[in-house]
Length: 421
Length: 119
Image 1 (cartoon, rainbow over the protein chains, first blue to last red):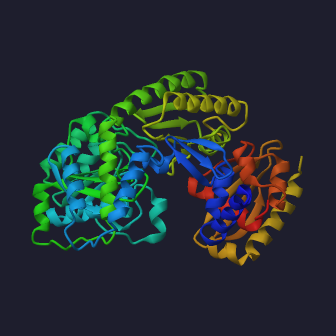
Image 2: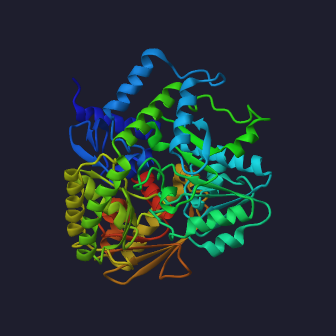
């Protein structure tokens, strides 16, 4: 058998040469010299055998845990009979997953079209919004993240992702997240939709005021515009409810889901909308298609994933484990107030706001040295995002908290940790 | 401790290396920035102007409104420009401080990777 270290070195070298050298450099600098091998629950083992607790989880694709045995079994069973399926034909697997999504989704959301990833789901949502309303303007939020495809990219609130690729799709208008006055001012008679993450993930775990989303909902109603909620990171129990919209007592007209719908095993996304909006597709039944979206295999994995989340009440578990984290965070905030400014959290969607942008990468490295994968957010390196699997145990929560405390203790003795550094 | 003259000498060599590196020039051709370098132990300051990936000027003193401010000891700064240390590592150790957008921090790291792949 080959030496794991040799295999690892070769993988890094090949990745740098054939895929992305800067990604390799960034991972090495951040202490994330990891080639994932064994995966189980909240843990992942490097090819050399080193164990880590995964608090990154592909920004939330592992709600049911790494390589959950029930989801793996569902896929294996599906593979005994099925393949991806022919997208043009009617599929019982698609129908079953769409029925299940209708059952668990907020409000009157009932109908689905499927994709492979989150960006595809957002593209579909915004196409539907324009097609259905026959209006063109889309309002989106600063620091938002919706994916890197055409419509989704146009709705990203970070210029660096967009700037090299312009001109993008016209008609997109950005407003500050959580500012209802700015949102109100942005509406016109040509507003087709507002797209928001209920809680911003990539932007740095930003939670809006409690009355923000209900007021946006009302503004959309007043202007006959659609509310699109991107629940790609917040969905499937992550925040302590099945969907984050449930915290605010509202329902969108269109909801996008992806990431954890695939159980960390098989890629699938969905755009879920009301029956009224579905009427748009009656005269246009083939206007939006996806070869691999909602494959028979993916739908069976999605069904198994939702059933697992419901059966094991993972939303409630997110509340309980979130509170355990919270107790630890409160202690750390008191002890390291010069380093940790604020904690933003809903269930197991958690963000640590550090004092400056160098801290995120430095903490990432120190945490990796202590067996925890927790990475700063793409939009702001001063924020560490923690999104562990919802199946994380009490003991694992404590290990993460201990690693955070040890890392902060070490970092607080180094230079460059102040707000002005 | 490195003197201002020593840092300027290192900076001149760095400028030649950057400007003669075709791969780097191609990669950075959409990067126009004003950078300040501050030696925290001596208080010396330096300004570098980059236009479309080319370093068009370096000078002692801090002039203009910078997009990027790099703060380090004079010795680290000298070593960095000579390619004798990996600034990314020093940044992660909190010994080199960079005030810039995340994109510009990444750009600087990319430059170091191209110029000193083994540093």
